[in-house]
Amino acid sequence: MAGHLSHPIRGSERAAPDGSAVVERRRRFAAAQSWIRATGPELKVEGGAMNVLILGANGELGPHVVRALEGRHRLRLSDINDLETRHEYLKVDASDIDQVIAAADGMDVIINLSVLRKDRRLAFDVNARGCYNMMVAAVEHGIDRVINTGPFYVVAGPTYERFDHMIGPDVPHQPGTYLYALTKSLGQEICRVFTDSHDIHVLDLLFYMFLDAETHTVESGSPIANIGHDLVPYTVSWRDAADAFGCALDVELDSLPSRSEVFFVFPDLPHQKFSNEKTRRMLGWEPKDKLDQFWKKAKS
Image (cartoon, rainbow, N blue to C red; front, side, top):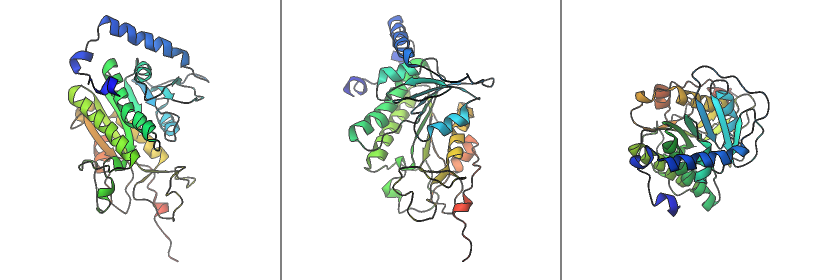
């Protein structure tokens, strides 16, 4: 990391790249283009569509986000593994700054869905360094809208577990020491620091449990997915989670209070431990799935 983080990029250094920097950037993208491919017919998009790069598009949330945005925006998908898709696809390691910069060429927006939870080195490389790489790419290409993601405990970690009513996304951030939360929190802070020095807006969408409201299945691999039958206080359907990205693309950046805003994404739930008021008010997000079938119980 020393080769990059030890020398923060200032606005004056990136605002007007010299000729050699432009040539190098084009060289990187030309080399990367050999990996871009798409299968199936090209999708038609609506007028006013944005060019959107999705990092980590082949994860669990990625297909739902693609489904929500395709036809409305031109998508370039990327991930570290292979993916069959109708959209442009670029094989990218989020921890590799040159690959991320190359992938962002010609884009209007970057959406970051990349995540790694367990291995200490890889979690830092993807969750923290990956955010740095993404923000450098945004500066290089003049991208003014970035949508980052993470778990709610990036903000409300273990020290908030004793609080039980209407916790919002703007409370002081206390992620704790859990590897996933800590590295994602570092990534979020890197994004915020970039917005202090550059004309880039970062919208951070935070999630926890995902659920298919029709099949009643939950996010695979979750350690709490099959414990009991009550709904976790921070749960959202896959399709409603994906719709939040459309709202984050549609919102006028000038309407946001700052260039770095955090949003809790989940429907109204009876626990009322957390609050989605900011998300609904600022982004105009309205969940379709109330999930009441999971918390309403018939009398025995």
